[in-house]
Length: 221
Image 1 (cartoon, rainbow, N blue to C red):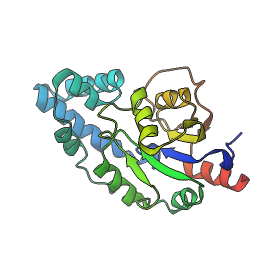
Image 2 (image 1 turned 90 degrees about the vertical axis):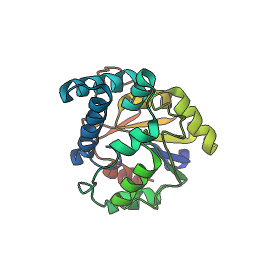
Image 3 (image 1 turned 60 degrees about the horizontal axis):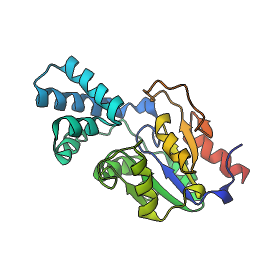
Image 4 (image 1 turned 180 degrees about the horizontal axis):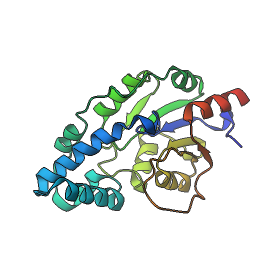
């Protein structure tokens, strides 16, 4: 059953491939930039750079975390480089903005990206005024989801009781730490999950369309 609105005081959303459809494939543009960064850094060709980049992503949670652990790179330089992309593929989603506006309580974006990039995406989607705050990779002390410290830091920063919170993410593995501390979890199953993991016991709700799911729970209220 969908959660009751009265039981949720904090609505927490991932950004990429969650607040916009994975079919927009914005990450493909970032992926090209990440491979180019790794290629230049390590002096390898692009196919090898992509292999290394994916290994870092799967092993460390983000490519950035892997590069910092293995090569001590400057995270600000990296994030500025990979997020310098056009966002023409994104379109305003007024129905989603309307649904988020009707949700009772606080609304926060919780992203492994950085704040400037997140705000560009939100503005492009027409969601610039929809959220109280963006809790980004810098606010996580560069320890990304699914590191448990990222979730503890989020709750501490905003005085959040996880038992009164709902977290939405397109990466199923990012929901496990949220569930472990008592959050209600929603998986946007849109094909973007890359980790092979058959355990889905930490997922409370699954949707292929976040906008539709939110409108549905609002109608049931």
